Length: 340
Ligand code: GLY
Image (cartoon, rainbow, N blue to C red):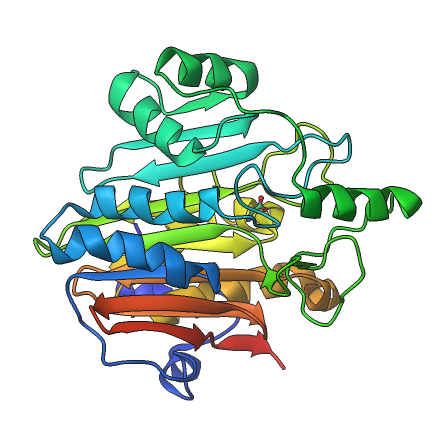
């Protein structure tokens, strides 16, 4: 565990940096609310609505984060659920993870033709002695638990995006960078005109002050077959310590894995940082590891602590997140970021 005297030396930025400037992004509401749910990207607004139904009735944060991201898994989306962009061989493969207030966790990776990977991840956690199931084994387990095998057919939007990608078949992973419309890895414009992004990650604190988190994605569009990102890897794409806080990530998973990103964010909170400071410090580590190449990547973290305070930080502009803490407060907020 990191101690307070050490965290000041962490990365390339000092405490003075953390204490200056707007660390929270535009429209940051009063911190320390409970219950509260926070989720990545604009898809988080709809996801929060279903999570909030659980929280407002006194339900458990674990149920909230499962119900919440199931909403996104059911929507047409470039990067979550069966309507998402496929891998380079034309198959949608899904990754998901979930973690509860007791430190229990479950995940699935490289899962095909199952509508709700987050619920399979929860069953891995609750009904097996394991943490992670992948590929065919994960699918077999899902079927044994009553999940249906869905058609492997791509959604109309995904087929169109895949056909477009096949014309050049370029492999230049760029995740979530705005203003790169037309590149294979830019967010995909949906037929309803909306832009759609990467992973949905969600964190919640319930009325009892218990924390849980969830994360679900199809990963990088047109990825190599078999590629798995950070989302199903506990400690990288998601981490919850009910005594301290929780973190979830979105963006280029390889960079998150390399720093065990979400575990790092939670450890930085344990060392005394606020959620926003911890996210900013973890992003600083990714930027310093990548040097000039950092301008070509996007990663963002969101974090929530035991007091119900939250914060976020991204490598660059364009990341937003949704926060809900009452029946009439479910706001989309632009995240703070480092690269100007
Ligand atoms: N963050 C999602 C992924 O890289 O797969």
